[in-house]
Image (cartoon, rainbow, N blue to C red):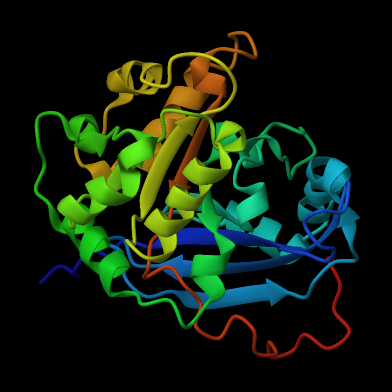
Length: 287
């Protein structure tokens, strides 16, 4: 009797955690970087931690991309894990609220200095939601499960809702199972009131997926840009954004394909022991 084929290997999840050292009002405030990488089953589910590194020295915000990329390039164990990953790789940047508009996908980690977003799906996450154990996870879990288990549909991109930011909280209360929201304004350009509504959507209403266009331009062009790479299921949106970025690499900097931020917060993809000492880390650095 022939041997059963090997089970498919799970995706390698690389998480880069960026934490503020200085208060938000400090000009060019400093941040610490911490890294970890995990294996997640092909159909999703809890993580298995494979390796981790302690915080870096504080890095000014203006130097995050350059210095952070250098840190990743020096992480030898991670490089070996990425090279051997046969189940795909996703890079997740865990960012504080003030940094959610950061262009994480332009970081690089190899000798070619090619942006990470051209090699692998790169998403951002809410650091506060990831790390705050007091946030009620039930709304987050409910919306995520709806996204994860919905059957394929003819137009998954149509499930990205674009509610008016002035009515976002009320709209979410009326739509307790909606999982993906598009922002009609770039995150960095949100008014104080709209930003509070987005925080409410993340921390209280549990919206797991948000997408927005950085800089000027019609935000709904995001859907048009993604349509040639439309996923069979909304759960595959990170891969669709990745393919879209690759096809836009020769376009100008203002092209929508080069200005898509995807917030992708999988509640299963959380390390419950993230703040505990990691075994074997005494004296380790970023090499």
